[in-house]
Amino acid sequence: MATVEQQNFINKLGIPARADFERTNILPSLVIAQGILESGWGKSALAINGNNLFGIRGDFNGESILGTDKEIDRYGNPFPVIVSFRKYPSFAESIMDHADMLTKPRYLKVVQAKDYKQGAQALYDSGYAGDMSYPAKLIEIIEKYKLYEWDQVDIYHMVVSGDTVSFLAKKYDSLIADIKRWNNLNDNYVIKIGQKLRVK
Image 1 (tube, rainbow, N blue to C red):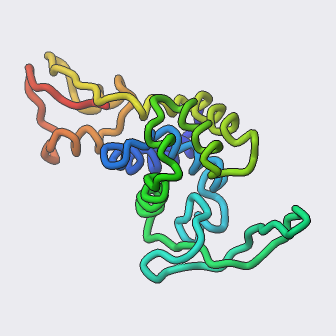
Image 2: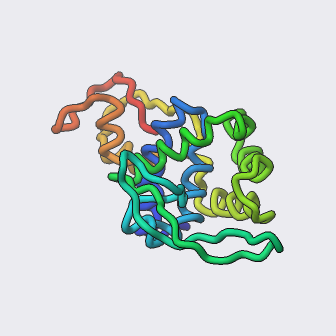
């Protein structure tokens, strides 16, 4: 069960990851889990100072920050190095840039994954991470916080007497702002009996 702070972070990543899913076919559950794992729930220095959730090096639109990473010497021993990491305006750009990276041919199996377990293994098999337990860590996060729900197809509800947007948001564990945005509702959230609303 996620704390309020954790759920807010999940939503902050889930909304752009879900929007990007339509463009890239990369499962939102994987993106959210990677963001959680690699940024320590958004508390890493890269996430705080550069909105960089995934430790991608280089620059983004000319913006970067310095940070510490690891390299491997010729004997297989890791050693720290100071490198530039991409600095993003927000988490949304970090997620989009990460997705763009995963659409390269090297990660084709990640894009083709039918579920989060296949996707997690495909990330490792494609060389995204050197940690053999990386897939298991992602799967554990996804299952613990039910992130697979972000992978589901859109859910619709036919409005009946007594329904309100706040009630539907609670019933379907969605955000009022999302229901409003998905259905182009005005600021008064006026809905009518018989109206078909996207609620998830």
